[in-house]
View 1 (cartoon, helix red, strand yellow):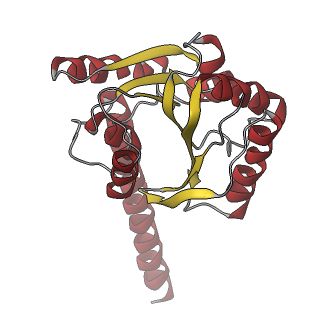
View 2 (view 1 turned 180 degrees about the horizontal axis):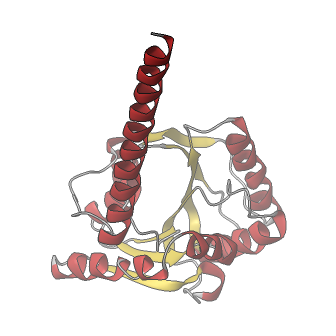
Length: 236
């Protein structure tokens, strides 16, 4: 009887192991198929109401130029990017800092990054004034004081982006931003406190670059991000 019980217990354990292995295989296969398929269909109606309202109140529209730092991720347009596009602004999508982009390339096949171009083509076909500049902001050579708003989500809070990388970026943001313009920064709100602390330390680079603000203009959450908008004091 003992041998029979051991045999049944062993069979049950083997079956449980097989089931777990099968489920793990299905899960991994699903992720792999998703990566191979790339981004799903875009939904341009998904905007952040809070950010859309903020941009509207600031008068962001067809006559405005907006810069979004971080374009190139193999995903649909984010809520804040969609909000900029929806308000009719001329939106320039620039690549993230090199250290962030290189880490992304190491983690995901490069061909996935190329799927960004159909997004831009679809937007242009719909009459949107958008452009992707496959360069980081410091190399994009944008006109001085051309942008009414600059958005950078999960850039200044990136753990691999040191102060020596943040300062040149902040200086270029200062050069490109119009006097009294907005800078919107954000970080993953679902992560631990270090993410928020890195975000706050990133503000030091903005100040050291000569940017200043009286107080936070607005703040909120959009998707997975907590964001803050700063109305930058005019500089001479």
